[in-house]
Length: 217
Image (cartoon, rainbow, N blue to C red):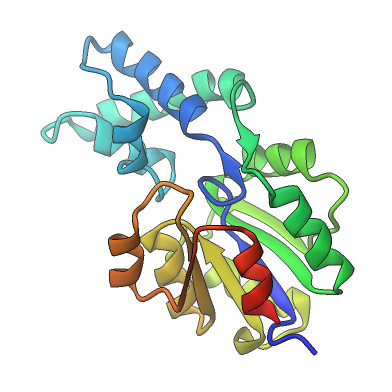
């Protein structure tokens, strides 16, 4: 008997290494505006709350709203062409998903990335996994850490929040789990460090995918 019956995963920095495609796209937009670009390491601190927040975090603080809107539209166009260029699953993630699926756990993805991109990335790399839901940023639904999407997934899994483990790499994911009354796992191979995840209240912390199996048992 496993301790949990369902697992919800974040996408960027958790299942798939996506920072280079995100960084390349944002830098292309910044160059259009003659602004300084950033390194992949710097972008790890700027992402997590959707592309609009990324634009805000990458532009000067006094940038007017209409410029942010315009830059976001440009980013969508650029990223649509680049988001599958360099992105790839983290080592062992395919194995992890296959094992969890074989054990009969219900699996889902809950991301702040645009819904279309989220689905396309999952279908490209994990098309053999029967996810209950693959949710990205959707019109009219608040982003994480608001728990709306997460609780919708729990309902579709036919599980109580206490039966579900939420796995992510950022404080946004840990707060989402807390807001949904789920236990959380912070993964240390993603875009935030130990201190950030611990401070956010992660129940578990893992640096290797196999440790997730131990938690579930």
